[in-house]
Length: 395
Image (cartoon, rainbow, N blue to C red; front, top):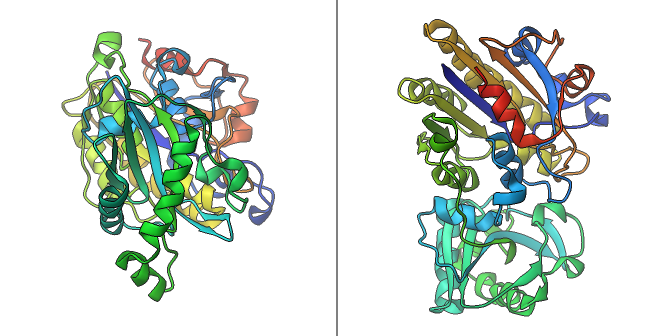
């Protein structure tokens, strides 16, 4: 049996005025996803337990069959694994965004989607000015980076910057035990970044500058049971996002690099689809994760969210489905967002999301299309997210 999973991050949404009271899934032309929903099993799944925050870390762990209530130790630790950083038991890891703050208000959670190359120079400057043997900055991808603090205990509440767009930052600053250290680093980063050549050039070009860092997503060193030990299957993951890379590495999956995979609107959709087809030749299961839909939700960009969905359908779902049908082996395919990122909210929500699966042994639910409304009407609801994987893999 061969298995394929496609996760269009944050694709689930709510009826939107810019789309005439419809959702992006209802507006987008998705013949392949609709076919899976019509011929296969359609339903909804709650990927985020009620006591946890709605993020891709928690939701994707659920989709892959892991109970985040028992294994989740924080987002940043997972991303550190993806960066190949050796973690110690006394390390605290923080996700470090470059952001744009103006008049003490969060203007942009990504500093205008600063490039990886630009950000690396800024991280180098931060380490030189603010780093030490106990405080170390690590470069990541685009606006997403990491800070590790050794030998200090934290019990803090932090806020994802994409949750506070357009809001004054004061009431969202870290708070709790040793939060003062984090706030001091965030404040000190302003002086380091203000006149950095990267920011001067960005301002000259009319682009948003990285005015400071924003610390959030704190975590500790993570461990997960391997997917092979749990299910007896080998796996591979295709993603441009460190969070998903880290989860894949922790469960023992291979990572498949795709040239031009950016984690944004301009990602190489066709390359991801072809890589998934090739990965299934020597792996039992492959995961393709696409971040563009989530970014469009955070940006409140309905047109880009619809376009990203259509690209996923045409260049990933379609080719993978065609290859599975022609391959001669038994197979199943699962399509599911990890969580909602509604255009109107511009942040994540924990409501159940639609899923559709097709393949050997799955009875059809006779849905009409892969949409939130059709999934809700199906009558099939998985209330505990990590149980969906058992259903998907059940022979």
